[in-house]
Image 1: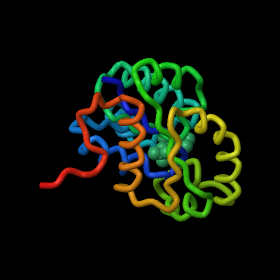
Image 2: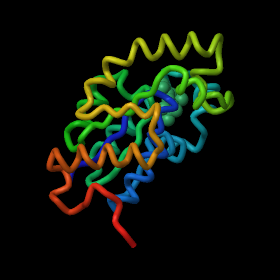
Image 3: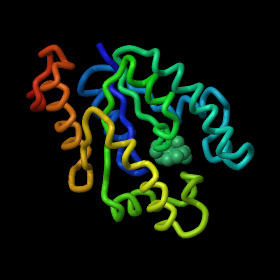
Image 4: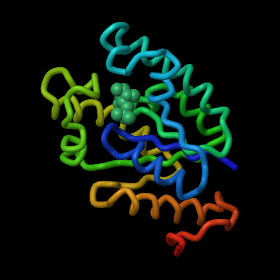
Length: 182
Ligand code: S3P
């Protein structure tokens, strides 16, 4: 079965939704940033501070090349994974791509913890988010399915994704789109 790959800007809920979705489907959950941190023995924040963004992108590219070979997994990616076409090409080979989006205000609210996201620590945050979003939005829109998470709770986002997967025949009829009763 194909991997289910979550892409989207920082703060759109990829990790939370990915974990829930994986649990719902009984599949392993993988977070590419967490794998990068584990494989390199440092946090993303430390990586940016010590080696810069270009080095992080190189590590991200290598991580994606490894993760794209997985099967049956739910994979949450970092927001900048779309910057490199090769990443998306690899992820598409064995994966269905789901983009999570959110309105600017929601993204700003959800990314307000300053210490975690190095790209948002500099300058005026709103301006930075706007510029990064503008440069990426078209790439997120190229996903197989796009879910606006602004007004939805994580379980509601999972339901939307489940509907899409079921309608697209990705689940081979094994799952109900409504949560199962105990
Ligand atoms: C980044 C997003 C981050 C992380 C890194 C760069 C980006 O992941 O990969 O800080 O370029 O948008 P999240 O989207 O999980 O915050």
